[in-house]
Image 1 (cartoon, rainbow, N blue to C red):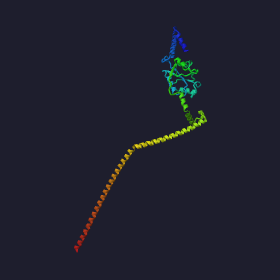
Image 2 (spheres, rainbow, N blue to C red; image 1 turned 90 degrees about the vertical axis):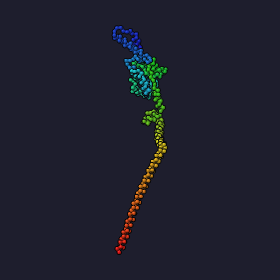
Image 3 (cartoon, rainbow, N blue to C red; image 1 turned 135 degrees about the vertical axis):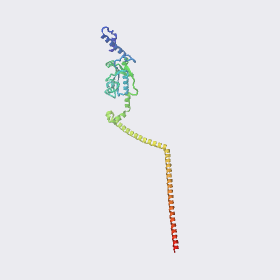
Length: 326
């Protein structure tokens, strides 16, 4: 339709009658120029569309929406300075038919996309193969996706985006290494028993988890053994910590033993010296006190002997006087 309009505009002569017809002709010529630039391939693609946002389309399944999905949508959004990002998401029927069962339902996948900040509009029930009718219906200028070939529904291994690449409207995005929906599912499958045990512990029944009675009992026994092993391990770690603390203290004691012994001996010697000095001073004080006491006793005895001599002299004088009187 756009090609027919462009061809008609090229073949139509410039109007000579009225100003209104001349303006219509210029408008048609401008549309032709925009169409030519939008269909060109390479770095200049999209340069002619300057009066409105570039409408970029990205599609996928987006099961278990992760940061790899978000990064690819970010690249699509930033592929042009002024881009309006439309994201198509296939429904469960198409996905289960051509790819396999999903973890999330189509409504959950739609809602996850609506909460991504790079997405401007979500298109539910997106087609498996992008067609010209779909591009025209949503006025899509470019389709953004990684360059890996994705097989269409024909069974002939045709690339889903082959038509868009031929038009020059394909914008390549880069995948994020180390993350994908398949990788996440593989992690769950690898540790399946762990997740079943975890959900059984949280109150889910075996019917909810789709496991048999025997498997449930076996997993519960394993869960009990695991709990016991964890407790034993915790106990061993505590004992190990205590032994480590004791060993550290012993090492510190050995390292500081000499210093402690020397310090003790210095304190002991200082104490003995102080004690000896105190004892010596006390003995000297006692000796001084004993000497002072002996001197006092000697002086008292001398005074008593002098008094005795005076009495004897008095008696002799009295006797002499008595004799003279007679």
